[in-house]
Length: 207
Image (cartoon, rainbow, N blue to C red; front, side):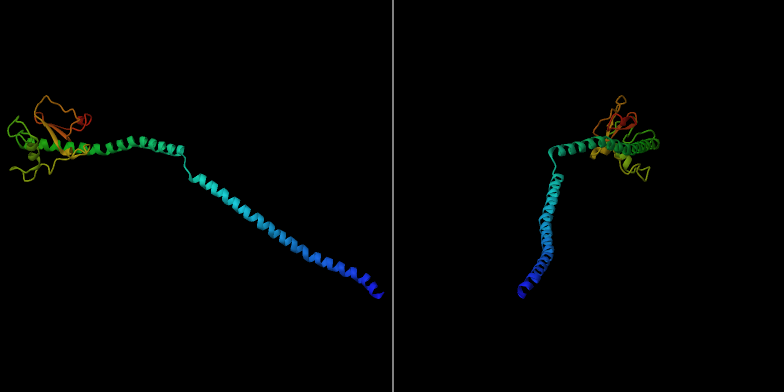
């Protein structure tokens, strides 16, 4: 009877205590497990989603389509077309002073030769005689009996002529022939009139 009374009195208490203890100990465990499972299931999914988006964006950024290539080529061609004439004009502006200086130097030396040789032009042996290119060049670049130094060390080149003919001279021996430019040599000389001009273009022959 006493045992039953003890059981009735103390049994439910211990049961309740055990249940509450079990409940108190199990709830944190269940919550912790749930949180871990939630983190384990959600975090990799987010990372993989972010990686997939990055990879997709990266693939789109790295790829070039045919219209993109055509547009890029068109822009490059447009820039080259705009910059080409400007570069050509700048190059001509640099070469023109050099051509004018060479012209003046040649004309001065031709006139000096005439003054020192009683009116004869370089290459002439008598007044009004024909002049060849070889005799003209030798008369100016080789010393003679009256001068220890030649008039010129060499014939200057026309900077507008890019090949070996830049320092070559076209010589004519007729008063009626005028320089028209556009020749294959750098310079033009009329032995009948004594005119010395540029021969690369009609425009430059007027200097």
